[in-house]
Length: 508
Image 1 (cartoon, rainbow, N blue to C red):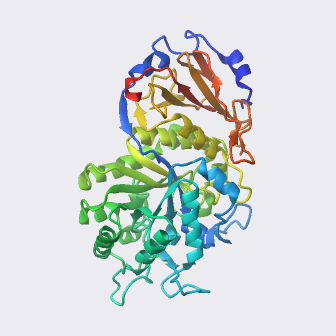
Image 2: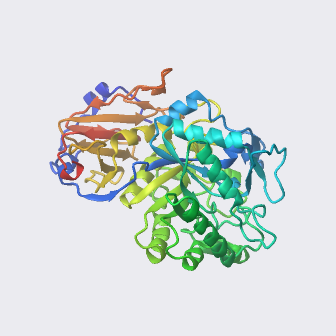
């Protein structure tokens, strides 16, 4: 495996001629000015989830190393006042912070005069007012706008089983009283997974349509600037024939929901996981396989679900933007290798592909809980995907460009206008092979090269240095290094490049 080295040594060892590694004089360096714009993403394109169960505390995905059949373990509420967590998260801003997840479907928010020791009937968790004030304060401190989903279990329903707005109104009122607001809402987290989402037994498409109509009327009346996002389905882009017929008949399939409620949302949302972790090994779902981590079959699965949900968007919500409101290495908390550098190839590739497909926002699950988090929940150390997120934000602006040519299918190159314009172009280059591949760059290029001594390491270097959070809240070890006009991306590495003199008119 390639070991990380300093950029000066790298350039000396790997600067190559056009004839050797770079395809031709018509490579990326001469193409950058002509790359056409193909999409535009939100300035909060990279966003993240804070699971509701993190805020309340409760049973969440069990850490690895315990009992083989242990799926969940009790966890305390997240300390959102932690200065280190806040300092790290602030560097990810501006972003959306989605406070949701399966547990949100059955969470009760206390009234002002309540102090409950257990949830009321029909709920599974209690959200205290102080906990929610802490979440609002955290979002304000880290430049995040808040999105939520609501309790839809048997608790917030009248005797007739009809959903009521009391809990939604209480959450909105408390958010505003705490100095925040709700930027968007999904009515239900993953409505097509009703058995997991604590929805009432035998909940039907007709029930959903009735309740969603109540929710939408409430939202338009009480929070007219709040985006209505949905339906938020998951896992339907694969082979549904693998699901037992009896189980499939009980699912609220996204197409059924959209067909019954056309032109109902401001943003079409869905969730994507390429597989499940071994925590869910007893299910029929595909298990994430470390041996496939760098294969096209694994890396490009995100396009399978994008195709499925985008055709539903085109049919029932034409012209609406699309968001992926939950995604990570694998469902059920992530595999052990979600914490390692090897997953950064999936992360960066997914951002590149979805941006090219005009997906406006992608929410990583989670910020700081379980193995798929950007930040380790115990040590507060950033994981490799955190550093990939930081470098993406610094080099890849909101205007998405067509990819330049590549000398090999193993070198995937994504291009955006640089943040700030002036004709500059940013590149994210992912080398999946063990051999170096060349890039032809402009005269004023800077490179940030992510490497690790092993793909399975939980730490990375950037240009040979170990990035870190300093005591004053700044990030160190992320200085870009000047690159030669011909630069070779080492094997099994990820390079972010800023070409300030590209002269692309779409980037002005």
